[in-house]
Amino acid sequence: MDDASVPPVAPSMGVRGVGGVPDPGGGGRWILHVDMDAFFASVEVLDHPELAGKAVIVGGTGARGVVAACTYEARRFGVHSAMPSALARRLCPQAIFLEGRFRRYVEVSSQLHAILERFTPLVEGISLDEAFLDVTGSVGLLGPAPTVAIRIRRQVSESLGLDCSVGVGRTKLVAKLASKAAKPSADRTGVRPGPGVVVVPSDREAAFLGPLPVRALWGVGPATAKRLDDLGVATVGELAALPRELLVRRLGRAHGSRLAELARGEDDRPVVPAHDPKSVGHEETFPVDLVDGAALRRHLARLADASASQLRRVRLGARTVTVKVRFSDFSTITRSQTVALPLDSFRPVDALAAALLASVDCSRGVRLLGVSLSGLGPVLSGTQLAFPLDADAGVGGGAPPRDDGVSGDGGPPGGSGPAGDSERLQAAWAEVTATIDGIRERYGRDAVGNLSLLTPEGLQGKARGEAQWGPSRDDDRAGRERPRGVPRG
Image 1: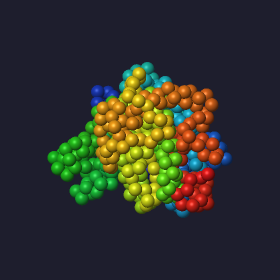
Image 2: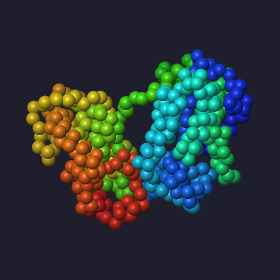
Image 3: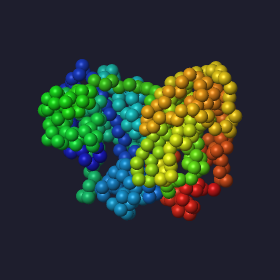
């Protein structure tokens, strides 16, 4: 739900001062949701004060880019995150477009989480700019939860020079929606500051949730919203009034039951301080559709290298490799393969991804290419397989991978086909990969890499967050200057 779409919340609906806030219920549990205001754009304004008060848009600056974040001055004109950059330019032609600096945002995010952990060890990061906190055990030392929320806002402002909004409630759901209600808002008439902190005690949950649109709830996407609309349901309050049995019949037992609970404010999920990622991956939108196999193969190698490197940073390996291909008509397919042993080296991931891509007819032109790694777990050390493949060898034959996200079975270690070959490459490249990581740590990510990453401009790996919001205008110009499907260089 966009920040500007959140209706103002009157004091009678749960916004309270520091004193006199009743117990939240739920066994006295207090959950906070901290959400930075226009995070990426605010960091840019912080680092470039001359941008203050201006419409600033961070994201892909090219024709195929998307908006990652924007200041509230840009939101006045209807610009919002995930909007195509081309549309944002039409809505707000005076906006200043910036490509974004993901490493800088990660740096500030680390500082933010360090601040939050001063208030409680129970901090669950959701993204770079938001987190849940369970402060139930801290109120005796730090004061009531609303006081803690105000102190957090003040500390973030003083230490980082940035603003955040904080929601307070007895559940994750209510706390997150409360932080939305605490945010500034913007429309054609101007930018209005939000309350900054919104507190929703248990006896005000129904009044707070009731008027919100059903899309405010987790799990309500366009398809579910359409089904609820067919039932005459537009608000959370109307949803809460429906019999659970009706929702189960229309939406399925699990989904229907869960939405019935959320509409009534029932959400018993705990704040989990740290958890391993379920998947890692990278994808890239091209300034022009690619049909040339060599160009696609080079981009695939960059994506595989970046994904494998990210896995090693969290000391995990992946059993499933997935390649995503989006065509010029926006139709999208995936190819997946599962192997018996976890992979974390470039060569086995790249080899398996190449076999998956080879099973796709790319003659229509590829708009977007992606590699993701899932089925994560510890990498087995000391594994000795039958024999290594030559470093420049392709993957072997065998049955083709299955289509559209259905994983094939890699079979036993050292088996035939792409899965078995990737497992042999994992064993052969273990020491090489460790050496490469050491060199990159000391001299930078482009100091060493596979030959397939080499261009006339040097090694071109892919950094985390690079071009994640689409190509830049420079990419657009380079794409127009070369024949369709031909890479730079």
